[in-house]
Length: 328
Image (cartoon, rainbow, N blue to C red):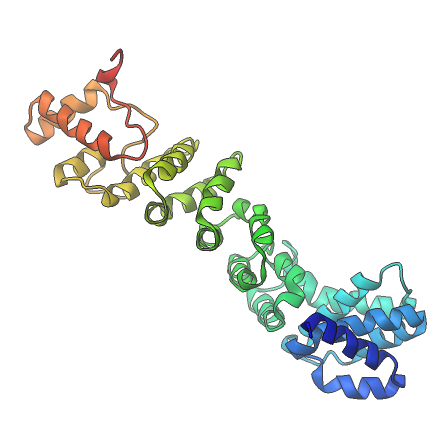
């Protein structure tokens, strides 16, 4: 028998018990992941029976919150799901609704960007919710919008196992995160889930911000490892359109180790040597000035330097613009 149907049958059976007896039966299971769906469905069953039963159930749940964040968060999340499910089906009394709102403000509302709730408390709420898995997916998504970087990153990590492909690729807002690391965590998950779709999805994104561009640049070795030369060329062509010089030059520096370049060729493409994290801006051409400066620096002829750049261009997955090729 399918698990969801079993959960519905359990909720239906409980809803037809004497009310107080049903509460005695469910009380030991309030914070158990396996019971979360049953307890949520029970709210829907009682809401269909009467406003009074839903109100009594919510009021009872709120009275069971406990004293610590770890105890409160799962119960409040359960109440929030029940309220969402039963909107338009049954009405709560004003006093119960007020108690519910206070409970939400004290826990789930902590993830609002300017809530003022410290990171330690938000992480405690998040860890408590994380024990419930997919049942609290919407609340975990809310946590990815927290004003605190550590909370956003942890929320993304918790969400990943519970999201379908479409859900995962629908979290576009993470690309606008103010920190690079949550974006890296997200993009790594996309690559692991469906690498080809990740490239296509990234190419559809407009106006990538600086942090998103930096995250993509930092993950260049992963992209190199995942893709054929044709797909990589498409992706890198999109990345070097970034309006941020630092991103374009870092992409070049990160690409070089994956190529069969000599030490001289690497130095030619790392103009700030020994600052090796910044390479040549792939949006800019290699000019005669570059060639002349390199010839002097490495005691080579101009033709020898050009030959080295030609060899590099043959290996790069994107076009290296060589000024002397114009007209050919």
